[in-house]
Structures are given as structure tokens and as C-alpha cells.
Length: 122
Length: 122
Image (cartoon, rainbow over all chains, first blue to last red; front, side):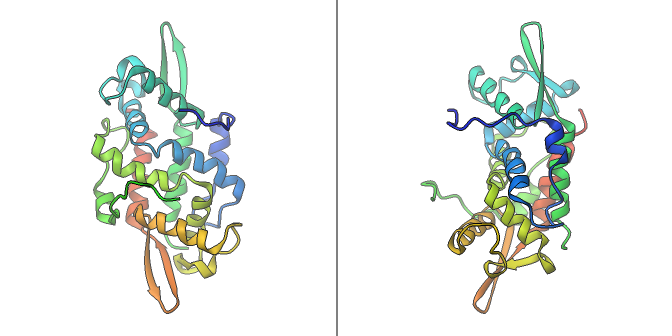
């Protein structure tokens, strides 16, 4: 399930600083490494559904206990939420028994801005 | 290099129709399948750099002949551009010897809109 290569956690600031709109100039190798990790994290249907479940949950946050209808086991849900966190897309906070996940607005906004740039020709 | 499972080409209309903003409601399995393919296509650093090279090239289009500075061979560039096309992110047109690639604005806008939704809490 896990990759042999362990990548450092992406912090929201790293990602918000990276990257220019896609049509501004060709991305550098370093910028592409950071941004590709975020896109890759959303490039799995189950993970994307979980991300959407957190984003659309009441109050904009959810714990594993709130998410049970995507057809995978609770450990698998936890695994995917951890991957989304490692990519900087979710933040988490432990409260009592459960870890609550929340969408990182700055990171998702940075991804959106990156794409928004690509829709107008240079 | 290629997956055993061959997926149909995504057409711009399929993608623009899919999907709701991520924070509106949890995505269905079908919506997530379509959207995850687009994100996965951008989830590779080389492919992301090529996408950015096309998007930022003069006139918003480029052929393999225009892209030579990402450190991979021309056949590899062609391979990745084909993958981006299969995901619906690029369209292509043959003119003479070369195939010219162009960003599909409706598709990229749909991806941007999907993410834009996730930045405001429900």
C-alpha cells in the first residue's frame, strides 16, 4: 500500500507559494514536483470521494466516524485521509477518540488558481 | 508503460458536465471516476511540466518540436501528451509533419471550479 520513497509532509505555506498559473511560463522541475503531489493525491477515485465527503460535511470537517458510505473499510478510509494530509490538502486535529479532518483552503485555492490560469491562452 | 485496462477517451463535454463543487455534496462513484482521471493525469511531474509548457506556449498550443527542455526524450514527450489528451485535458490537430496540442479550456475550467468550491466551508 505504501511507497518505498517517503516524502516530507507538504505544509500549506509550501504549496500556496508554489506555483505560477499554468499558462504564465513553463513550470520548473521543483514546482512541478510539489504541484504533482497534490494532483496525484486527488487522482484516485476513492480518495477524491473522501476529500469531497470532508469538504461537504457540516462545518467543513469530518472524522472517519462520519464517513462510512464510500464502500471501503474504516482502516482504508484512515489510510487515504492520511495520504491527503501528507499532500497538504487536509489538516487534522485530534479531539477525544477521533481525528477530525478539514480541507486546507489555501492549498486548494492554490491548485484552483494554477488551473484557472490555464484556461486563458497566453 | 501502459495500463492493462484501456479507458475510453474523455471528451470535453463529459468532463465539463462532471462534477459538482467538492463542498456541495459527496461525489458519487461515477463522478469520482471521471474527475480522478483528470487529476491523475496531472499527478506526474513531467506530465505537469509538459502541460504547463503547452499552456504557456505562444498562441496556447505547441507541438513536440516546441518542447525540448524538460529533460526527457521526444518519444517520452509524445507519450505523455497522448496521456493528457486521453484524460481530456488537451486536444490535438495534425498540421503537416507535426501534431499540435492545445489546452481544453472547458475541461480545465471544470477542474478549477471543482476545487474552487472546496475552499469555502459548507
